[in-house]
Image (cartoon, rainbow, N blue to C red):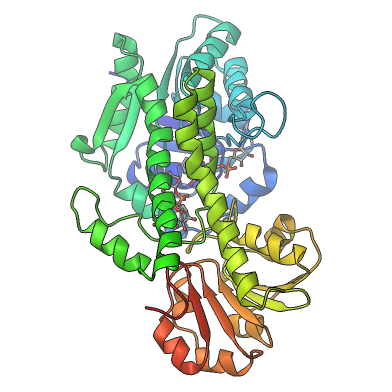
Amino acid sequence: MVQVKNICCIGAGYVGGPTCAVIAYKCHHIKVTIVDLNTDRIAAWNSHQLPIYEPGLDEVVFERRGKNLFFTTEIEDAVNEADLIFVSVNTPTKKSGMGAGFAADLVYVESATRGIASVAKSSKIVVEKSTVPCRTAESMRTILETNSTGNLRFDILSNPEFLAEGTAIKDLLYPDRVLIGALQTPEGRKAQQALAEVYANWVSTDRIITTNLWSSELSKLAANAFLAQRISSINALSALCEATGADIDEVAYACGRDARIGPKFLKASVGFGGSCFQKDILNLVYLSEQLNLPEVAAYWKQVVDLNEYQKKRFVERIIKTLFHTITNKEIALLGFAFKKDTGDTRESAAITLCKHFIQERATVRIYDPKVADEQIFLDLTEPGIVITRSPYDASRNVDAIVIATEWDEFKELDYTRIYKNMKKPAFIFDGRLILDADKLQKIGFRVHTIGRKENEK
Ligand code: NAD
Ligand code: UDX
């Protein structure tokens, strides 16, 4: 059996960094080198201020960095030394050309694959860690086999990543499952086993699932589609709750107590964000269309459409409530990240909200505990935003507060102090259902919560 002793990971992002840092943390006998083209990102991984915020990540990286964990831009050397290479590069939605707006852009996967082929001097196991359309592994194998020199062997595995941001380290240390797909040939199974042995250093074998390549690739898209579908389902019901007087948290609880439904991932919100859900569903939609399955495509597309509707619906509720105009009004936006415990803003609902507010010529005073100012300026190039250092500063003299991210600290604020410093009537719109509406109402706030009628609990 092949024993993996040296791993290279191409792509030092939200997935490559934490995933391979945890492998180094759990497998001291394996040398792990994470490479990237982005020199600033690699410099940050080698500094005290890591390029991404993730609870528990610093401890893992600082413990193993320089011992069996390395970050470098010297891609060629790292690829050559490795016996197993993770390809963990970005696969964003295509912006132009065929499949624009839906298909995954595979340009980075292809260039990483060609890079491996052009420098490899020995046989390798190449692992798709990026989320890719079904059958990408086949393209990778063809590129590797037709572009490498000598008599080298490349076994391609699919090992999709299921970590969620904000809980990445916990998810990696205690995964529900690890999925490894391989061609069902003797060599494919051997490679599959070699990667399974790496994970077996800390994951019990009953949690390591082995499948064929295409099942593994499709399972990743399917898992994200299922999860996002639950959020769109609860958000669709939240609109019904607002119209009827039912309370969405109560409905979620009542439904979630059915063991077949389960309680997780039923929190209504202003809409899901993050770099994965929308991208991966659109990818699935495109795949279905390409396979001439328009009904399947339409079914999954609706999950994304409902998410857009939810954001728009929330904005409309805010404008209507603020006497049908927010022009020249000031709005405090609490939270800019797409969820709590991350500084990531990719596809954050907060961005959509801000753009709508700015279009209506309101001023938005933004506070987020982890998102960097530069990131906000990259996401919002329009004038009309003010970045603030505290929720108290953000809400000073504003007409309304909008909760866009469920940061724990927003539950514990001194709302009496905030109320005193706001214009009256003082409105608060809870897009995350984290606030105690009764308590706020007693202070004097007019409270609007997603999935509830005004001030009704
Ligand atoms: P990211 O943008 O944070 O990181 C990707 C990195 O790859 C970048 O730093 C980029 O510079 C580097 N890169 C691109 N091409 C390269 C090349 N040829 N050589 C070297 N480096 C190269 O992306 P991410 O969030 O880490 O996502 C990576 C993949 O994992 C995507 O396919 C994504 O869908 C998937 N995924 C992401 C998450 C998540 O929570 N972010 C979870 C599961 C799966
Ligand atoms: C997701 C998947 O959970 C993970 O398995 C996959 O590997 C990558 O995509 P991530 O996007 O990092 O992870 O975070 P997740 O916790 O899934 O949240 C995604 C979005 O859904 C966030 O905006 C979150 O606030 C929202 N959400 C989540 C809800 O609105 N309600 C919920 O009940 C759960």
